Image 1 (cartoon, rainbow, N blue to C red):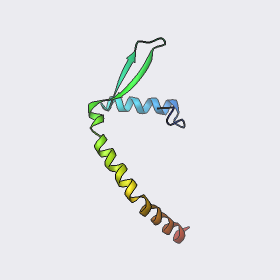
Image 2 (tube, helix red, strand yellow):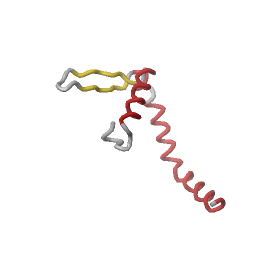
Image 3 (cartoon, rainbow, N blue to C red):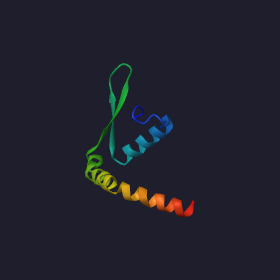
Length: 79
């Protein structure tokens, strides 16, 4: 995950993963390699969110141009 989002600090990433694990969204797996590695996998309850996230991404793709136009109108009037 750090490779994908390099701006995320280790402390923040660790806290987020622990919170997700506590809530049952991800499962922590200790890999018996040398050195020992940790892998996080999406748990079944976390996987159930995929449909909702996909719907949100679809909504965003469809509506982003209108959101950007609203921002431009606001900025022109207020800023």
